[in-house]
Length: 308
Image (tube, rainbow, N blue to C red; front, side, top):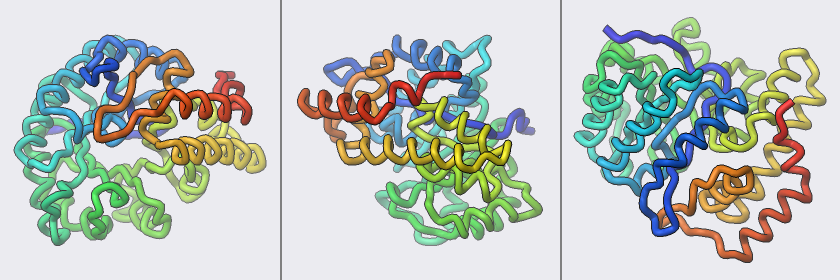
């Protein structure tokens, strides 16, 4: 019987996988990443996901990454959710079983996206195989159609899966469809844990009832979002909107520069050297790094991310 110890409320940082300049894993940096998250009062790390360049890692590397994170967070306030998604269901099963062996908080997975499930029924069958490999851990489906190009009804997924995946507790919704998001929050009398995955629209999702959020900018800009949430909860919408627009400006700059490489360079700016991305994600040129740093500094980024 699985134990749902902690829903993913508050901020969940989708962490970067650290690499050396030659593209090999640099697991020693995980401790620095965790220290930064703890300092910024982030409660959860979501490892090996999109931000973590999961499809560019071998199964063994992903297991090594999980082992390192679990060793580093032992005895701290930080909990680890392990993303196990892969184009190979059997690889995902092995990763899920490994996460359970190491006592992760939960596992999550997106859908295979090369050979794609052609119906919600097939998606449920696929996810059930992965979830049963870690039956003691809470299981989250990770809906991110912008990356997987799989656009199936998440409401129907939960309706079909709830009796077939005993450890299913919700889904990570990285999708700007706020109408569907509301349906998910209200489904089955609010049974499901549905952390929101679009940092640049956290305020909108919070106003609709979101209790948690998973995102990459929480690695380096968590204070912005803590202030946003605090302002919302004291009904100071002007301040909440101001903080959200700061997020929008940062996210836009990263996308304009080349998101994965730009986000990793932003981590370097705050003293967390996660290194370059691994091919096929492109590294930034020295000129692009310099320009991005200058632009972020001019907009006030370094002041915005100071903890109160």
